[in-house]
Image 1 (cartoon, rainbow, N blue to C red):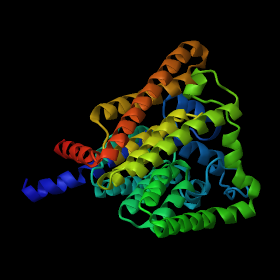
Image 2 (tube, rainbow, N blue to C red):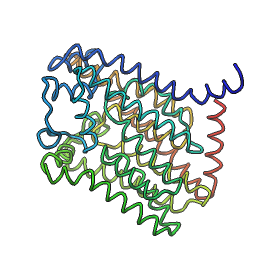
Image 3 (cartoon, rainbow, N blue to C red):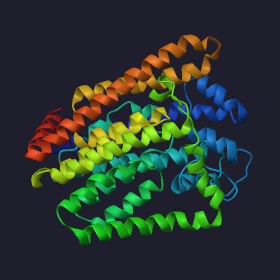
Image 4 (cartoon, rainbow, N blue to C red):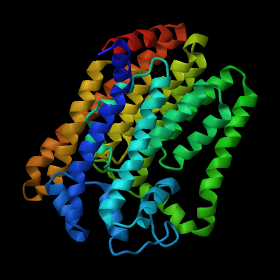
Length: 399
């Protein structure tokens, strides 16, 4: 193979690997269309092959109906994900086509995420493209959509496109709340540089797009639009470390999780504020990753696909390989153990102990990730963050 051919293959490799993981996941999950309706969830849990894309579309559209999101159908997600759930129902061909169309959209989001990461100096596209979590979780829910929007917003921030960054971040938050993780560090960086005009443009774009997407739905169906907030606000601990600690009161859980989130946001903002000029971009990325990791780890509800946000965070900051390996391993174990718990309820006491142990190990790995991010964020204050980023990028390129 010629030198140019090797270069093209090297350039295409993360896209090809990410695609292979997602196709593998699609092939494993699409078998669920043979068990429609009420039979789907028991079959999916027992075969470790569950997807919200199949379960939620089966609940709503299997009989040919097409209830309007939020007006005629309560959906526990923000507006853009409600649209992503509903839109494929217009396609002919039934559930297999609806599922495949949804996975195709998520594939485009995955490719866009890898492309954005390749444009961010010092990022590691392989953290996202190379993880087996894509096979397990890429088609479990719609999280690759807000992840793509979050990464695109980070790129806009680094290229000093404040209005674009605010608009894309608003779209991300209108899909799932996680992309708000960018805001503390990005706002602090603009304030520290006294870029009031840029901050105003970003803020105006964020508010405008948020209202444009959400206000028509909120006015037309206030109860349906607010269901996302009521549903999540009233949930107790589910599969999270709080369950292990026997904390069950929703109000207390909301307060504890909010305290952790605010602490992480404060650290992200302070790190970006204090960062040396040549390390400010890395500080914003580190702060974004810190908020994501702390938020995911301390959230009162843990869903296995949240691991994708950890891999996106690691990709942004080119995290160390040992951390990638640990997260990849625990994400695979978490998937199978979670569904085994739901399948083997006859011997739940046995798997209950195993699952609690896994929750503790998972939380410890995420805590180690957060500690590493804090150390890296601290290094940016002395200007060492840019050097660290470059060294990590060199190691990743060599791999």
